[in-house]
Length: 238
View (cartoon, rainbow, N blue to C red):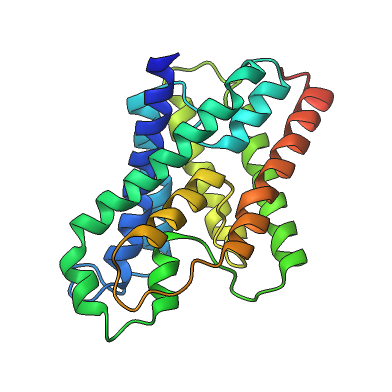
């Protein structure tokens, strides 16, 4: 169990290092890849998750996936909270590592980039704030995400799952990510949001806990639960 918890922790941290890292690289003043755009960022998220899955193997790195696996009987319910906590802590540590790497660029950007933009390097935010619609977007994105992973996992070709999940992330990001930034994962959003709250960032905005808890916090669990029920009921996946 300790080994699996550490794998969840490190796998989530690595995912966040790639993901939050690419946002910092794309936005902060003085980086080599500033202004590269959303395709650059979304592709890095997809590739980064693929690499994390290749390294750490059979990990969830997402409390919503842990919930789905518990519902399908593949993970004991007693592990739901430990796995989820390990993943959120991994998200915190991954974001802190990125901040250390980009500390000079954060300092150079303090008077040029808005505090809201800085916060959004760490956590997701809606393009248009409408909590019921934002909730539906994250619910549906996660429903597609978890359903897709469960389907991909049925293919037993070695190495196909990490690649398939990376492509799935890329497709969801490009097609469905515009309204909310497609968190689909409490650990992806809450971990870096906590890091943003505790780090000594100059001119820091509030952490917007209302949005963080309601949309990327709760909606992915609802989407994952519906995905587990659908994939089990329609395809017999369990």
